[in-house]
Length: 147
Image (cartoon, rainbow, N blue to C red; front, side, top):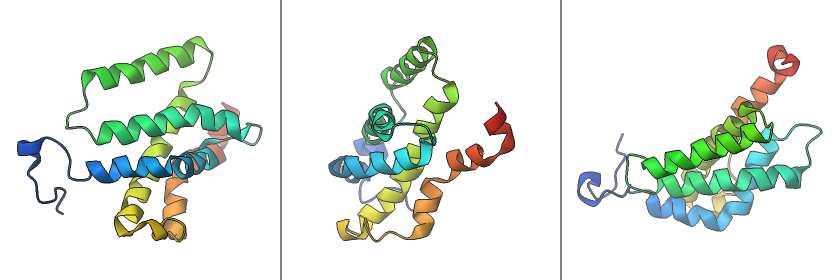
């Protein structure tokens, strides 16, 4: 599988798909909505969840568009978010779910965006299911519901 376009990442440092990821920022609302549909619980207010999800989506798009490896400062941002969430009493699982779901959504959107913007609304159901898969599956598991 060819991961790099016409440029050698060792020469440029920037992943060949970086521009595509940055263009996905134009669809940030759609990406956030997909993640919210995945991670929001039945009692959650969608706008509150979107407020928490949006930074995770932006962080993912921006960080993956940067030259690898992930910079220490970017990892510090994640650690700081985890500390804030812990101080606020937010379960670590909720923070992790935002990033896991974002990864699935961005991966699916990246493939759709590569085929054209019109494909976004017509993306296959299997991509939507995959994007919403992991957190939704955990919520359905009895161990997840009972704690």
